[in-house]
Length: 520
Figure 1: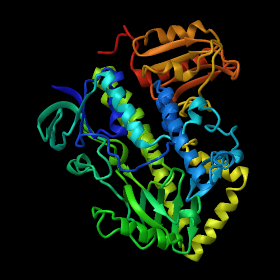
Figure 2 (figure 1 turned 180 degrees about the vertical axis):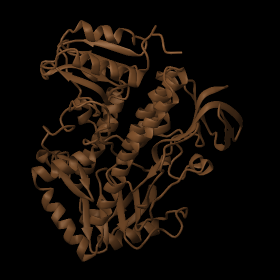
Figure 3 (figure 1 turned 30 degrees about the vertical axis):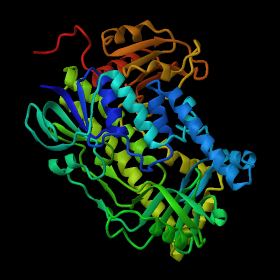
């Protein structure tokens, strides 16, 4: 076969998945119909889980550099709005952690002691990174890792059997062991494979654009609700969003004209602006759908191919990156023969509930944006809650998927959760030891029995013996390649209870130890 895996779609999710597969030793080809990164405006920010995943793969410096460029544009926007004074007001703008239905969430009201909100390390400082920048950075990384990225090549069909998949493309055929559709909300792979895709129909039409305009002085900065909808202005020069509740667009493929954007912005904002140039524009709706199973035989789905929802909250990219992190190491382990195909069942069982939660999260935002009296009354109550520590903490946790916990064996509070970015006595942090995409056993009490158990997995699991003064109660943590905790134990737990739990977790996720004799 030419490749172990063909990934259809070379956006951030497809490229992230390809990188994860390569780290696991798989041969990967990515098919992307576009010849270059699409410049059309998309997500302008990322949530903490995306930043955390990229941080764990050594990409934090690149993210920080891109964010600084975004910050410079933000300060320019605020200087323009404030007659040359971009300092104090700009810093106030940075005091937000996101929004719910356009209701801004203040950073100073977030209780960082809540699980998942104060343990992401430097990744928590990354937010203003656009989707195109993520795609560009991941594209460079994929090439460095040896992924065959084929731009200008489109998947046109495929046939799957028990042993492989034959993929037809616009320039020939490829034979591979597996096919993963990362080809967006209108996924060709999903349609051809016959995945069920239930959900709710759209009721809104949204436009997002970057424009040149005059008369914008009376537009509110940030999000604003009016009698006719909701709109946003900023945080970058010329960026506007309109949300209207008169149903989905009659033709989603129709060109977005200057006149149409201007009419919509005037109608929703009530401000007599004049748009003189449209630099980039897109429209979207709030249809929310999710496949019932992320796998059909040798065909799998990830990202928007598996689930679609409105863009409110910038969670779509994070959800897709999470899919890629979860699937990549598992599929690579199956390809290598280290694990049975049954491991792939955990991809759906772990990721489907996360996707379902985010679909409901975006639906709830639409409910709080509607201009009818009942919805506006609801919006007032949510706005009041967002002025409290408890309310803002809850909304921020949902926005950043801080409550995600996979149903894994074990009672330790860390088990099934994204591992905290622990800092060790040698000055390193957990993420520094995850760059290679391998599992990691943290031995925090210098326990030779635990290390002896892990020795048989040296080809799959790294071991780090170190101190962690900030979490003295922890004795050991087993971190999966995707950064989630497979097992953990505290210093008060005595052997053999602790060692038995580790042995079970190692076999569950990484198979039998090297040299072990399996029953015939």
